[in-house]
Length: 190
Image (cartoon, rainbow, N blue to C red; front, side, top):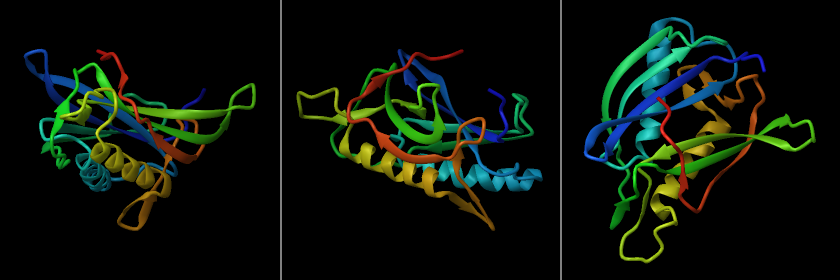
């Protein structure tokens, strides 16, 4: 698959097994051309990280954002942050670090068997509702905030005069989203 779309990667960190610096990333491809000058990338990073802060617990910090041209893993723009998550969730308890909340987005792309192709995003430091015996169910406040983020990716994030919508790496638009009710698992990639 040829990568035809520009992308951005958001780097986050949270406490994990006694190490306060466990990092994880999410990469997002978007429609249209790249934002252009570095100042435009910075505006996109600022708007995007603000949206991500809303569903991250307070001990998850957004620490970097990087922008990429199609087909490249060399950043054309980078910005450093120290943004704590702002998710207000009463009686929330963090899951083990390998656990992750899962955002699944359907796309216009079809598999060879004519099934929809999905893009997934995994967010570590998922939380569940304290005081319950169900530690597998994502906290309803986090789930709702992630659904709102899915709406933004589907309908587009407006930055200046431009709207950024999520796509597959080869340019197929997203058509819907679903946040999994149950907390999943995702290994860290180094």
